Length: 295
Image (tube, rainbow, N blue to C red; front, side, top):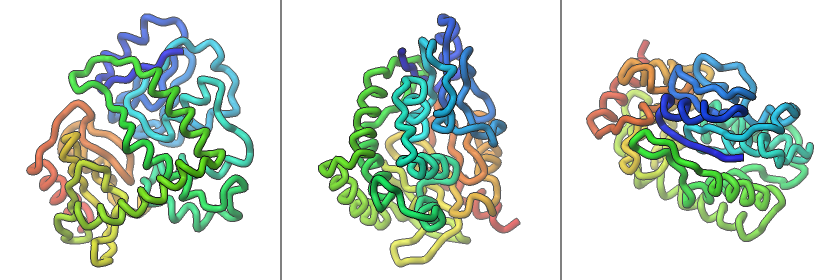
Protein backbone atom coordinates (compact mmCIF):
# COMPACT_ATOMS: atom_id res chain seq x y z
CA UNK A 1 0.00 0.00 0.00
CA UNK A 2 1.36 3.41 -1.00
CA UNK A 3 0.45 6.83 0.38
CA UNK A 4 0.44 10.02 -1.69
CA UNK A 5 -0.03 13.66 -0.67
CA UNK A 6 -0.81 16.79 -2.67
CA UNK A 7 -2.27 20.25 -2.12
CA UNK A 8 -3.82 20.14 -5.59
CA UNK A 9 -7.00 18.06 -5.95
CA UNK A 10 -6.65 17.70 -9.73
CA UNK A 11 -3.09 16.38 -9.45
CA UNK A 12 -4.02 13.90 -6.72
CA UNK A 13 -7.12 12.72 -8.59
CA UNK A 14 -5.14 12.16 -11.78
CA UNK A 15 -2.56 10.05 -9.95
CA UNK A 16 -5.16 7.96 -8.13
CA UNK A 17 -6.93 7.19 -11.42
CA UNK A 18 -3.92 5.08 -12.40
CA UNK A 19 -4.96 2.50 -9.78
CA UNK A 20 -8.00 0.23 -9.66
CA UNK A 21 -8.34 0.14 -5.86
CA UNK A 22 -7.82 3.52 -4.22
CA UNK A 23 -8.80 5.25 -1.00
CA UNK A 24 -8.55 8.79 0.30
CA UNK A 25 -8.26 10.11 3.85
CA UNK A 26 -9.39 13.71 4.39
CA UNK A 27 -8.40 14.57 0.82
CA UNK A 28 -10.54 17.67 1.23
CA UNK A 29 -9.87 21.04 -0.34
CA UNK A 30 -12.52 23.41 0.95
CA UNK A 31 -15.80 22.28 -0.60
CA UNK A 32 -14.05 19.90 -3.00
CA UNK A 33 -13.06 16.33 -2.13
CA UNK A 34 -11.01 13.73 -4.00
CA UNK A 35 -12.68 10.34 -3.74
CA UNK A 36 -11.33 6.81 -3.71
CA UNK A 37 -12.78 3.84 -5.57
CA UNK A 38 -12.91 1.74 -2.38
CA UNK A 39 -13.57 4.35 0.31
CA UNK A 40 -13.53 8.12 0.78
CA UNK A 41 -12.86 9.09 4.39
CA UNK A 42 -13.99 12.72 4.56
CA UNK A 43 -16.01 14.54 7.20
CA UNK A 44 -15.44 18.29 6.85
CA UNK A 45 -17.31 21.05 5.05
CA UNK A 46 -20.29 19.71 3.06
CA UNK A 47 -19.42 16.23 4.37
CA UNK A 48 -19.96 17.16 8.03
CA UNK A 49 -21.74 14.29 9.73
CA UNK A 50 -19.83 11.56 7.92
CA UNK A 51 -17.69 9.18 9.94
CA UNK A 52 -14.24 10.48 10.85
CA UNK A 53 -11.36 8.38 9.45
CA UNK A 54 -10.65 6.55 12.70
CA UNK A 55 -14.36 5.74 13.08
CA UNK A 56 -14.04 3.36 10.12
CA UNK A 57 -12.18 0.92 12.37
CA UNK A 58 -15.08 -1.56 12.52
CA UNK A 59 -15.39 -1.75 8.74
CA UNK A 60 -13.42 -4.52 7.01
CA UNK A 61 -13.93 -3.65 3.33
CA UNK A 62 -10.48 -2.20 2.73
CA UNK A 63 -8.17 -5.20 2.31
CA UNK A 64 -7.53 -4.60 -1.41
CA UNK A 65 -6.55 -0.91 -1.30
CA UNK A 66 -3.42 -0.23 -3.39
CA UNK A 67 -3.03 3.53 -3.04
CA UNK A 68 -4.17 6.17 -0.53
CA UNK A 69 -4.46 9.90 -1.23
CA UNK A 70 -4.04 12.61 1.43
CA UNK A 71 -4.27 16.40 1.42
CA UNK A 72 -2.58 16.86 4.82
CA UNK A 73 -1.37 14.95 7.85
CA UNK A 74 -2.69 15.01 11.41
CA UNK A 75 -3.73 12.52 14.08
CA UNK A 76 -7.18 11.85 12.63
CA UNK A 77 -5.66 11.32 9.19
CA UNK A 78 -3.16 8.90 10.71
CA UNK A 79 -6.01 6.97 12.32
CA UNK A 80 -7.62 6.51 8.90
CA UNK A 81 -4.32 5.37 7.40
CA UNK A 82 -3.98 2.81 10.18
CA UNK A 83 -7.48 1.50 9.47
CA UNK A 84 -6.57 1.00 5.82
CA UNK A 85 -3.26 -0.65 6.74
CA UNK A 86 -5.02 -3.06 9.07
CA UNK A 87 -3.03 -1.97 12.12
CA UNK A 88 -5.55 0.30 13.82
CA UNK A 89 -5.37 -0.27 17.60
CA UNK A 90 -9.10 -0.75 18.06
CA UNK A 91 -8.66 -2.30 21.50
CA UNK A 92 -11.45 -0.90 23.68
CA UNK A 93 -8.78 0.42 26.06
CA UNK A 94 -8.03 3.08 23.46
CA UNK A 95 -11.64 3.97 22.70
CA UNK A 96 -11.58 7.31 24.52
CA UNK A 97 -8.29 8.29 22.95
CA UNK A 98 -9.78 7.95 19.46
CA UNK A 99 -13.01 9.64 20.50
CA UNK A 100 -10.89 12.55 21.73
CA UNK A 101 -8.92 12.56 18.47
CA UNK A 102 -12.14 12.99 16.48
CA UNK A 103 -13.40 15.70 18.85
CA UNK A 104 -10.12 17.62 18.56
CA UNK A 105 -10.13 17.27 14.77
CA UNK A 106 -13.60 18.81 14.60
CA UNK A 107 -13.29 21.46 17.31
CA UNK A 108 -9.57 22.23 17.62
CA UNK A 109 -6.76 21.19 20.01
CA UNK A 110 -7.84 23.73 22.62
CA UNK A 111 -11.05 21.72 23.17
CA UNK A 112 -9.19 18.66 24.46
CA UNK A 113 -9.54 19.99 27.99
CA UNK A 114 -13.32 20.20 27.62
CA UNK A 115 -13.46 16.66 26.24
CA UNK A 116 -11.46 15.35 29.19
CA UNK A 117 -13.77 17.08 31.66
CA UNK A 118 -16.84 15.46 30.13
CA UNK A 119 -15.63 12.03 29.04
CA UNK A 120 -16.41 10.22 32.28
CA UNK A 121 -14.06 7.65 33.76
CA UNK A 122 -10.35 7.96 32.92
CA UNK A 123 -8.66 6.06 30.12
CA UNK A 124 -7.73 2.51 31.13
CA UNK A 125 -4.35 2.69 29.44
CA UNK A 126 -3.17 5.97 31.00
CA UNK A 127 -4.93 8.09 33.56
CA UNK A 128 -4.31 11.34 31.71
CA UNK A 129 -5.23 11.39 28.02
CA UNK A 130 -3.63 14.80 27.65
CA UNK A 131 -0.23 13.14 28.12
CA UNK A 132 -0.87 11.03 25.02
CA UNK A 133 -1.95 13.99 22.91
CA UNK A 134 0.87 16.25 24.07
CA UNK A 135 3.35 13.52 23.26
CA UNK A 136 2.00 12.95 19.75
CA UNK A 137 1.87 16.68 19.09
CA UNK A 138 5.45 17.03 20.36
CA UNK A 139 6.62 14.35 17.92
CA UNK A 140 4.53 15.73 15.07
CA UNK A 141 5.93 19.22 15.51
CA UNK A 142 9.45 17.92 14.90
CA UNK A 143 8.36 15.55 12.14
CA UNK A 144 6.28 17.69 9.84
CA UNK A 145 4.61 16.46 6.68
CA UNK A 146 3.37 19.00 4.16
CA UNK A 147 2.48 18.53 0.49
CA UNK A 148 4.81 20.05 -2.12
CA UNK A 149 4.10 23.74 -2.60
CA UNK A 150 4.06 23.40 -6.40
CA UNK A 151 0.93 21.24 -6.40
CA UNK A 152 2.71 18.04 -7.41
CA UNK A 153 2.10 14.63 -5.85
CA UNK A 154 4.61 13.12 -3.43
CA UNK A 155 4.80 9.58 -2.10
CA UNK A 156 4.92 9.61 1.73
CA UNK A 157 4.61 5.90 2.55
CA UNK A 158 7.77 5.84 4.66
CA UNK A 159 6.62 8.80 6.75
CA UNK A 160 3.19 7.28 7.41
CA UNK A 161 4.73 3.97 8.47
CA UNK A 162 7.09 5.78 10.84
CA UNK A 163 4.21 7.77 12.36
CA UNK A 164 2.25 4.57 12.95
CA UNK A 165 5.16 3.08 14.89
CA UNK A 166 5.57 6.19 17.02
CA UNK A 167 1.86 6.41 17.85
CA UNK A 168 1.74 2.77 18.91
CA UNK A 169 4.70 3.36 21.23
CA UNK A 170 2.92 6.35 22.75
CA UNK A 171 -0.33 4.47 23.30
CA UNK A 172 1.55 1.67 25.03
CA UNK A 173 3.22 4.06 27.47
CA UNK A 174 6.75 4.69 26.18
CA UNK A 175 8.04 6.81 29.07
CA UNK A 176 10.84 8.46 27.07
CA UNK A 177 8.34 9.78 24.54
CA UNK A 178 5.82 10.77 27.22
CA UNK A 179 8.43 12.86 29.03
CA UNK A 180 9.11 14.75 25.80
CA UNK A 181 5.39 15.46 25.65
CA UNK A 182 5.42 16.99 29.12
CA UNK A 183 8.36 19.21 28.16
CA UNK A 184 6.56 20.24 24.98
CA UNK A 185 3.54 21.34 27.00
CA UNK A 186 5.74 23.71 28.99
CA UNK A 187 7.17 25.11 25.77
CA UNK A 188 3.65 25.83 24.52
CA UNK A 189 3.00 27.96 27.57
CA UNK A 190 6.02 30.03 26.55
CA UNK A 191 4.65 30.22 23.00
CA UNK A 192 1.58 32.00 24.32
CA UNK A 193 3.76 34.95 25.22
CA UNK A 194 5.97 34.90 22.12
CA UNK A 195 3.19 34.68 19.50
CA UNK A 196 0.83 37.28 20.92
CA UNK A 197 0.33 40.36 18.71
CA UNK A 198 -2.85 42.00 20.04
CA UNK A 199 -6.40 41.37 21.19
CA UNK A 200 -9.47 43.36 20.15
CA UNK A 201 -13.18 42.62 20.19
CA UNK A 202 -12.73 39.15 21.61
CA UNK A 203 -10.21 38.13 18.93
CA UNK A 204 -6.50 37.44 19.46
CA UNK A 205 -4.10 37.97 16.58
CA UNK A 206 -1.04 35.75 16.74
CA UNK A 207 2.02 35.25 14.55
CA UNK A 208 4.43 32.35 14.76
CA UNK A 209 6.11 29.60 12.76
CA UNK A 210 4.14 27.18 14.96
CA UNK A 211 0.46 26.34 15.32
CA UNK A 212 -1.12 28.85 17.74
CA UNK A 213 -4.88 28.51 17.28
CA UNK A 214 -5.32 26.60 20.50
CA UNK A 215 -4.10 29.59 22.56
CA UNK A 216 -7.32 31.41 23.52
CA UNK A 217 -5.92 33.06 26.66
CA UNK A 218 -3.77 36.15 26.36
CA UNK A 219 -0.45 36.12 28.24
CA UNK A 220 -2.13 38.02 31.09
CA UNK A 221 -5.04 35.57 31.28
CA UNK A 222 -7.81 37.32 29.32
CA UNK A 223 -9.96 34.68 27.61
CA UNK A 224 -10.87 35.42 23.99
CA UNK A 225 -13.55 33.97 21.74
CA UNK A 226 -11.40 33.59 18.63
CA UNK A 227 -7.83 33.40 17.36
CA UNK A 228 -6.47 34.45 13.99
CA UNK A 229 -3.11 32.78 13.55
CA UNK A 230 -0.60 33.73 10.86
CA UNK A 231 1.97 30.99 10.29
CA UNK A 232 5.04 32.91 9.15
CA UNK A 233 6.80 29.76 7.92
CA UNK A 234 4.00 28.13 5.96
CA UNK A 235 2.50 31.48 4.91
CA UNK A 236 -0.95 30.31 5.97
CA UNK A 237 -3.76 31.74 8.10
CA UNK A 238 -6.09 29.89 10.45
CA UNK A 239 -9.26 31.32 11.98
CA UNK A 240 -10.66 29.46 14.97
CA UNK A 241 -13.28 29.89 17.65
CA UNK A 242 -13.03 28.69 21.25
CA UNK A 243 -16.64 27.45 21.20
CA UNK A 244 -17.03 25.83 17.83
CA UNK A 245 -20.71 25.06 18.39
CA UNK A 246 -21.83 28.59 19.24
CA UNK A 247 -19.93 30.97 17.00
CA UNK A 248 -19.86 32.53 13.55
CA UNK A 249 -18.74 30.16 10.82
CA UNK A 250 -14.95 30.10 10.48
CA UNK A 251 -15.19 28.51 7.05
CA UNK A 252 -17.59 31.25 5.89
CA UNK A 253 -15.09 33.88 7.01
CA UNK A 254 -12.12 32.39 5.17
CA UNK A 255 -14.13 31.62 2.05
CA UNK A 256 -15.46 35.18 1.97
CA UNK A 257 -11.84 36.31 1.86
CA UNK A 258 -10.20 33.67 -0.38
CA UNK A 259 -12.88 31.65 -2.14
CA UNK A 260 -14.03 28.05 -1.93
CA UNK A 261 -10.52 26.54 -1.85
CA UNK A 262 -10.23 27.93 1.66
CA UNK A 263 -11.66 25.26 3.89
CA UNK A 264 -12.43 23.74 7.24
CA UNK A 265 -15.64 23.89 9.21
CA UNK A 266 -17.58 26.10 11.60
CA UNK A 267 -15.10 26.12 14.46
CA UNK A 268 -11.77 26.26 12.64
CA UNK A 269 -10.81 26.95 9.02
CA UNK A 270 -7.81 28.04 7.02
CA UNK A 271 -6.59 29.79 3.91
CA UNK A 272 -6.23 27.80 0.65
CA UNK A 273 -3.55 25.12 0.92
CA UNK A 274 -1.76 26.17 -2.27
CA UNK A 275 -1.88 29.96 -1.73
CA UNK A 276 0.72 31.91 0.26
CA UNK A 277 -0.58 34.52 2.70
CA UNK A 278 1.07 37.66 4.03
CA UNK A 279 0.70 39.76 7.20
CA UNK A 280 -1.84 42.07 5.56
CA UNK A 281 -3.99 39.03 4.80
CA UNK A 282 -3.87 38.11 8.49
CA UNK A 283 -5.02 41.61 9.40
CA UNK A 284 -7.94 41.28 6.96
CA UNK A 285 -8.91 38.01 8.58
CA UNK A 286 -8.57 39.61 12.02
CA UNK A 287 -10.94 42.44 11.07
CA UNK A 288 -13.38 40.04 9.37
CA UNK A 289 -13.46 37.83 12.46
CA UNK A 290 -14.12 40.79 14.76
CA UNK A 291 -16.93 41.93 12.47
CA UNK A 292 -18.48 38.44 12.46
CA UNK A 293 -18.56 38.38 16.26
CA UNK A 294 -20.48 41.66 16.32
CA UNK A 295 -23.34 40.33 14.19
